[in-house]
Image 1 (cartoon, rainbow, N blue to C red):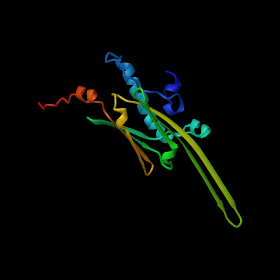
Image 2: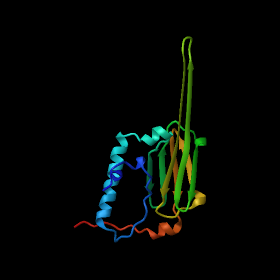
Image 3: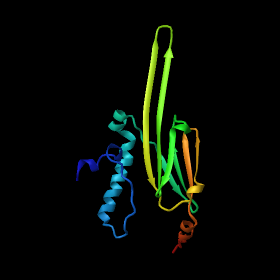
Length: 166
């Protein structure tokens, strides 16, 4: 096993989950799940050297699916809605943006200037087709929420199966 398989995804190329056949080898599924667990665990503690070097950051994103819609919630603290770009193409939602912050303080015997820049790019593959003309995005207090209603065919295809006891 290569050492890069043990490093968080943020350190290397970004992986986009793809749909797999049900006859997939169980060992590959186990390895993929272990990689995901390592990524989520180490991502909390280890800053990416690429983030510091290239001024990028990796916002937290939650994807929630209900019977009628898919909701994406991204944490973007310190950003304005004008700095965020959202696109939807071929069942992939793309979030990108750039954060710029400049502070200057001047006193009688001192001058302090601080600047920070960063950008992000996230691609989120959608499991079903959505109605692109009804997609809504809201941005409030650093939290972006994108609501995407599912197409009627996708809603009809889903079948809820009750679970019986005993």
